[in-house]
Image (cartoon, rainbow, N blue to C red):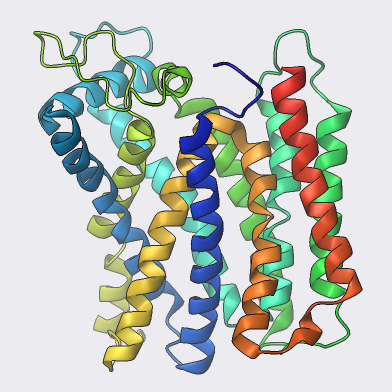
Length: 375
C-alpha cells in the first residue's frame, strides 16, 4: 500500500460512506415502522433483517463469475480451505479433514455475537427516544477501544495504551452526547425509557466485544493481504489446478461476506424456532405485515441492515474495531440531518449540534491520522 490511506483504499472508503447512509435509513425506518405503523415486533424484524444476510455471498459470487469468469465453486473451495487452515485449526494442513465440530461452534458463537446486540437494539427502539438509543448505542466506540486495547496485540514498537486513540475516542463520544442532548427540544420519551436505555447500553458493550472478538479470531491474514493489492486487480483471476486460487489474494471483502452469509444462514435456519413455539402456545402473536406499505418498509429495513452489517464486517477486518467504530459515529450527524429533512424543522440544528458534530469529526480525523501516519 502506498500513500497515507486506510487499508482497502478507495473501495473501503466507498463501503464506509455506503454503510453510514444504510445505518441512518435502517434507524429511521425501524422507528417509523414500530412507532408510526404500530408494527411492534422487534424479534420478527430482527429475524427478517438478519436472515437477509444469507444473500450477500451468493450475490458476490455471481458478480465475480461475470466479472472474472471464475466459477463460484473455485472461490468456495478457497474459502473453505482458509476457514480450516487459518480460523478453525491454524496448525492443520490444507489437505486435512475439515473440522466440522469447530465450525459449528464458530458459527454458533458468531451468530450469538451478532444476534444479541442487534436484538436488544431492535427492542430498545420502541421503548426509548431515538436520541437516547442513538447516543447510548454509539458508546460502543469507547467500549471497543477499551476491549481492543486489552485483548488485541498492539502494533510493533507501540505501547498498548495509546493516548491519541484514547483522546480521539473520548472526543467522538463526547460529541455524540453533545449533539444528541444539546437541543432544547425534547424528543418523545418512549414507553419505557429506562429499560430502553439499559438495553441500548448493554447492546453497545456486547457489540464492542463482538467486534474485538471478530477481529482477533475470525479475520484470516489472506483477507488483510488483499487490501494492499492493486485495487484494479479486484478478482485475482488466475486459478490453480487444484480448483483454488493458487497463491492469489481473495477479492475485496469476499471472506467477510462469507462470514456474514454464514451468520445469516444460521439465523434463517434456527432462530425461527422461538417464534414458532411462542405462537404455538398462544403467547407470541408473531405475524407478517398486514399491508403492502408496511411490508415494503420492513423489506427496506432488511436491505439497509444487510448493507450496513456486510459493509461493517469488511471494514472491521481492514480497519480494526476502533477506527471502524469511531467512523460509524458519523451516523449521528446524518441521523440529525435526516430528522431535519423528515420533520422539516430546522430547530433540530443548534449550536450544540454543530459543536458535537465537529467533535465527532475531529475524533475520527485523529484516528485516521494516527492510523496512517504513525503506523
